[in-house]
Image (cartoon, rainbow, N blue to C red; front, side):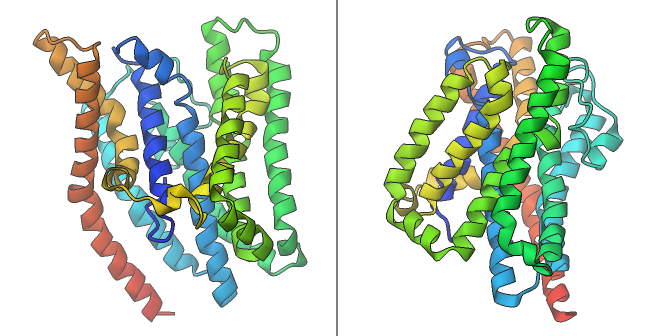
Length: 374
């Protein structure tokens, strides 16, 4: 969940949409009005949109640096990532492991899984589902760690020019991994059993190697926008057409993913969703798109709060509904949903002023020192 870029204003709308999709999807695990089940059904794709956004923004930044300097400042990159990601994440871990009333579920995985960003492997969401949504942060942190190193290695070889082929290969490998996993572990299982869902989440939905589609598509767009003048021209001259194409393809993806854990959705669904959102991201950065030309204070603010909201929303919803239940206030109606939504945004504002802004000053000083010491 990368912070807002001053250059690509259209991405604010997408980031705000992504966090709303995630909130609607996760809210179904709490007491909720009936309409949430329908509206939030495909909210899981909000994480895929975040993956495409992160893949594009991070890679675009790195490719631009490579073009201008023929190098990447790893020290500066990792300092920025550390102070953006770790302080809010560490504070959320502190809440979960110190205050049991913040936990939306009954049990947490081991703390070392969170600290090492490996919680997405072997995650038993049925029995240890508290703070399970950190799985996507693990994948993104692994991505932040390895992408600049990989690019530095490739730029010293002739293979850098074939990076789009490598990215396509990685996406195909991810699809192949899901195909193999489905046919070896899940094809003959009862898809209504808890064991099926435990295995599906653990072996298909959460692992990094099965979820590289979105990040890969984002990196591919970042590469082509920097190294292909023809691709960049097509994007900038066809923004609204790309949006329409992306929406149509996304609708087709939702049709295929109507049953989230079906064979078609499990094998091909993530790839189709990633491609769909990739085309919409291309529209959002296009100079001719209504997305890039329109600005909204609301989406800008929600986008800037999206990481903090993502970290804290389950704990906040859980605590608020518990408090409402204790005084006999209805928690399954639409009013309580919007109240929870308001408190989640409030939690994001708390993170911004108490944590993020303080560490932003430290980050800026560290980056300044790093540039002086070069």
